[in-house]
Length: 342
Ligand code: TXA
Ligand code: MG
Image (cartoon, rainbow, N blue to C red):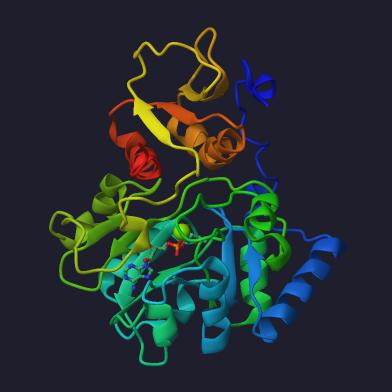
């Protein structure tokens, strides 16, 4: 394996053609047939692999309790962990949230469709299976045209956590989803490689103070700027009472132990180590490099971790990106992926 990695610089898979078509998706006959099959599976209460611009989701009918339970069974996820409801636009919000505060409307108009999840007070019709029994519900409007097309054809909200087994790396291609679930894999809509590459920013608007519960590529500064017209107070810290598995210390993790190092740390090359380098793989090291720019780095991160995880090395060593705001969400994912590694 390692020869396959030697001196490679990882260029994230070519940008999905969907990006440029976001406003006018032209679906091919094959895509339309795939969508019909996916809608039929959802109507039977089955799960579907859903491409979004962040990561692939494992989707099921949000208002069908048995279907939502199937998501948990497939993922091996504890039942009290809530899942996000995906909608085609903000119009259906009041069907799932009993209160839609001005801050939600502002953030929705600025960032939806896109990589932002809002936590709002739940509508009584939302099943406990979705909310983990909490009084709130997470809602997102994804931008990916296939997700949009599926949501519109299906006509109901889709509950969808990331399509990985619990605690593992989120999938950013259809092939990743199939390899996560093997012979249990659901129908997967193939929407190409995800544009954003890491999970959405989660903002809790269910109490007076907006809080970022999970950092993502939409930064707290962008959220604050969008809310500044409301005179909204500074974003607070995550509330320890809220059950959000993305907040678990160890998450998004490869099986291979992972160690974070400073970019300039001198690590002797070894056949047992593989490196995820920043910008360029140092002379003599085996591994991959990701671009030293946060958007492209995030886009390629999970695919790179999967490749390194399958490399057979006994440790993945990751050069830390700069300690800057633009890299905050990436630092968060790297820290969680390395947590618990010896
Ligand atoms: O980008 C994303 O958000 C992807 C794509 C598929 O949309 N989804 C995703 O879902 O990352 P998941 O389940 O892997 O992570 C969602 C996070 C979890 O940490 C979950 O606990 C949290 O959102 N969450 C969902 N509903 C919540 C709620 N009512 N209160 C607090 N956290 C919630
Ligand atoms: Mg997840």
